[in-house]
Amino acid sequence: MSEQLTSHEPATGKEFWRGEAGDVDRAVARAREAFPDWATQPVARRIELTRRFANVVRKHADDFAELIARETGKPLWEAQTEVQAVIAKVDISVTAYAERTGQKKLDSALQGKASLRHKPHGVMVVLGPYNFPAHLPNGHIVPALIAGNTIVFKPSEKTPVVGEFLVRCFHEAGIGEDIVQCLHGGPEEGKALVKHDDVNGVLFTGSARAGIAINRSLATNPAKIVALEMGGNNPILALKTPKVDDAAATVIQSAFTTAGQRCTAARRLIVTEDFYDELIPAVKALADRLILDEPFADPAPFLGPVIDNATAELLGESFLALMSRGGKPIKHMKRPKADLPFLSPSIIDTTELEERPDIELFGPLLQVIRVPDMEAGIREANNTRYGLSASLLGGNPAQFETFWTKINAGIVNWNRPTNGASSAAPFGGIGLSGNHRPAAFYAADYCAYPVCSTEMEQPRATIGVGLADA
Image 1: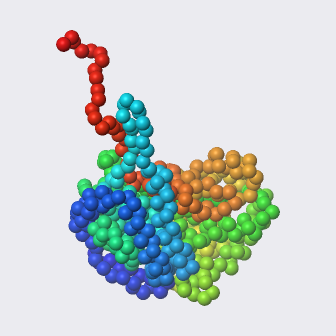
Image 2: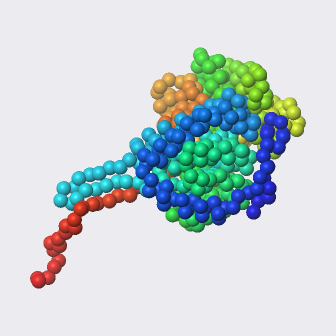
Image 3: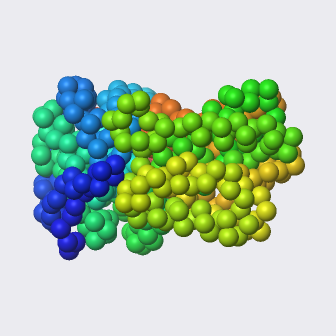
């Protein structure tokens, strides 16, 4: 299938890992064989083992964070928050399983009783992204394990070391090596896993293009559960507010955290005319102060490099393309080291563009659009095929209610960043951002299916009509 795989540290360019692609058929067969025993374990036992996993991650937290920082290039402080999210996911998933997939029994008197219980699907494939290589796949794996599924996890080929480490933590906690497996590979292995006849579900986080390809390849197979977490061309709409500095900080957090490599990052800052001349200089001034550096630098950087040189080159070309079509640079994109993927935060006014590209520019590139008023701003915010996250800055409760009602997004925030999402709530979007199977707290919904029963301890039935005389 795929050739030998390598991983490189974005901040140094050094090779970090080299390995071979895994055997898809063998991995799925092992997961299939392990499924019946794992599924019949008491749920209390499965929960106990996932809690042990959280303790294992806690024990290795420093090493885990260092691996994430090295392989993704994100600052160490941010890698540490990702490790904490991995740990926190267990208790959240336990609560969600009880709330979303709990058992119910109804007494129907002479008709016996009615029961609602849930069963696992079987073998679940988890396809992980590179931007949060531990937290995001873990958000699928933990609830799927609690529900009783077995897992074949293919990490991004750009972050295989973090994927391996995550799976080793499950094994160290006592969860069998056939129950959770790490399978390395590239696009070919991913396609083979998606189409494999013995796979019961595909849980994906990544680009819209890849998600659409998965959806298309399984369009004639309704038996396979598919949960797609994709990206967004996310808007942040700014109305006039006296809190200019706070608004600017919220924009910076939305657009440039994780070097803009978040599916919920703000791609478009839509500003009303009466606030433009106050907000934009404040945003630029703050962006000019952001420290761009390697993960372990002192002082700590706000952002590190993007994932690789190819990504950096594509983003640079995108910035130039916006300029050539009429965009007016507010803060130019710069690449301080030509051989490494460090990109400075960039801001460009695209108000005058006849057509703005409706794509997810996955990096530190923010488009600014000037509008006359809030209604025009909402129309512009909805001018996208995506629908993941949106945020309103300024305004009053009535205006936020209008924004909430009219905006097309699965996450709608007020005076908070677009990437401010709670793990105790569902996470997902509409349009090209997902397939109506939100993750986070609602991941339990796609990890098990409901089974309804009517039950009596002894058969009891009569036929009261339509019988001939005996």
